Amino acid sequence: MRGTKQAMTDVCKDYVNSLNSAFAVTVSISVLHFVFSVITTVANIIVLVAMWRTPLLQSSSIVLLSGLAVADLGVGVVVQSAFTVLHVLIIAKNLDVCSLIMFYNVSSSFLSGISVATLTALSLDRYLCLHLNLRYQDIVTKRRAKAALISIWISFAFLTSIWLKSFQAFLIAACVFLSICSFLICFVYIKIFRLVQHHKTQIQAQMYGQQNMADHIRTAVHTFVLAIVFSLCSAPYLGLMITIQVVGPNRVHWLALDYGASLLLINSSLNPFLYCWHNKNIRKAVTKVLRVIWRCCRTENV
Picture 1 (cartoon, rainbow, N blue to C red):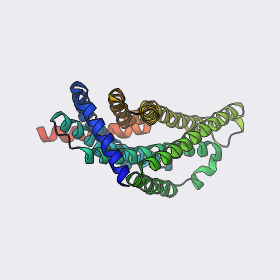
Picture 2: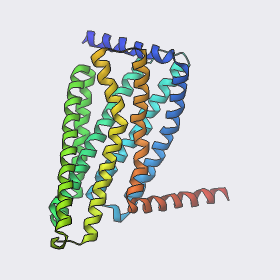
Picture 3: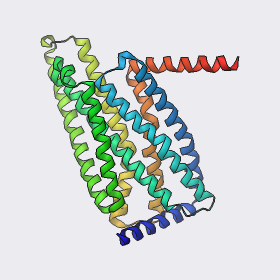
Picture 4: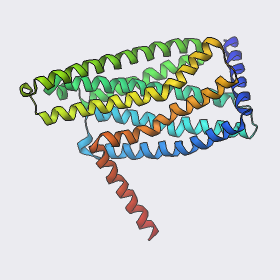
């Protein structure tokens, strides 16, 4: 245990020294994350309020989507704020930040893991929606969706606690988890693609109308886009983490990892805009919330 702590301390000092020697990089990242922490927090709060206040959006898939928004909100409030403070302290030559780095790593791993698991649950939900047809609403209920979210949060609280005991054990568990989620998402979307092709050839035999089928396909595509964007944002960070574990760290690796972490966290800022872009009901609900906020601001200024 003592050897693990010493190894983590050495890694921390190496990382801090690398950032301390690259002033421009550290400043740019601190400014970037201050801006994006505000965007992430405000955008996800607005989306969550819009979802919770709109009866039309009360469905199992929206429950799962709101779970993803809560995780993204946590990234904005906790992780990006900690990331910003960390870089500000390094700029101020306060290099005793290993505890803050540990807090950032644990919280970001916890919330990122929840995001991946929730995206996997959303993908499975879209497959079940297309596969079960009219039985979907009876089987996939809001109560079960909430139970799935609670299970995800509890599971990742346990998984992240492994980090505090053994970083290597956590890496193994995280790799296994990511492999399972990646396999499930790929498998589910292959099945969805086949279902869509089947429905196109037998559209007249469907138990529901063509418009409903088109809506379900659009929501499946929306979830797929969320998964793709998350993969693109997380790939550089994961690739750099694997590189560091295999060949060992150096100054360039740590600086590149910092930018990779930045891209991963920015994903939480992009998601609310993706919700609005792909889902017209969410877009309308968000517009209503923004109008209420605008009226309140105008009233206070009068």
